[in-house]
Length: 456
Image (cartoon, rainbow, N blue to C red; front, top):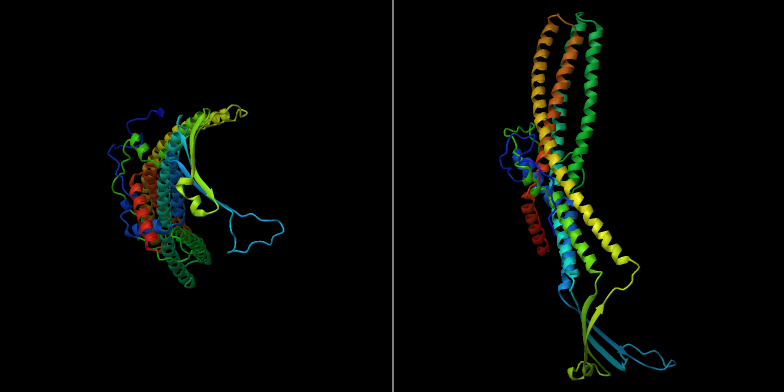
């Protein structure tokens, strides 16, 4: 196999200021959330999609074993007996049958891999197995990202509901105060209706958030392989995590070694090359050695007597003469498949690097966005405090207070979503960087499944 030239790449990522080595570990542990760690352990133990992924890998492993069987000759044992009689005779009864002849034969066949066809087939099966292992690792990364996203999506919804409940309580307090002032003749009914409308509109948003909360909870339950419930046993932190250190992506060339999707396409490209070699070898004659030994007699012990057995040995040569161009078409087809895999491999490399660069941009810009929103929330809160004081001093009407209240609520809500967006951006980055941590996890999960199977 001749190594394929990959696209040139820089010494460091364009949107990263550091070239420190990437810390390759189960990435969610950097969130320092024990509840999340417990959830991830349960996901890896109970997720049904992961169980399917392991079954697909086991199927490939069995195919690899089947391909390696071509190293050895095949042996077949046949045994027959014959009973003769006249057409008019009654059918023989079970237990009274008296066979007229026993025939026992052992045959063997071995194909000589003169042109490397069988070797190419075994190599292709091995590359398929390695590609399947990379697919399993890629699925593990994807599953971990999906699980963490849903966990923090549930936290975001919970925080939004808490903010909404505090806002409803605040609006209700304003409504009660304004109603009291109206009853004392201090304000007009217009302000009462404004306060009542603002309170009712805010309450109406809670139902939508609760629907979303239940849906996310259902999704997490399915991830855990259990019946979906509206209220689960998942413990959540009180706020979104704060990241104090910048995540170093390392250098581009190292990413390609850690990305399982790149490794998967690479091994499939090698498998396509081996199948092309197998197809080319199919154009040439095949050699096989066959042999057999056996005996026949009306007594089983005599049929198995070595002195009465007959053996034979034969060398076969089979050469294709004319098959309507089928063999050459197979060669052309496998060669085209190899060329296709080369292009796919190069494209996968570029997409992998693009995903890292995109994620770096999102992380940097999202951090700035969160900082700006934090300043907006602080300013809106101060403005609301000042507006409240001015309203009760009669300096402004309630319409201005409502506007500032809405600004503060929207800013606080946007800040919660932005922090969750920052988590999503970080997830995009760590998953785009790949990770060899998946190897250890696959081994540990496989060992656990083996222990469970042996204990049954």
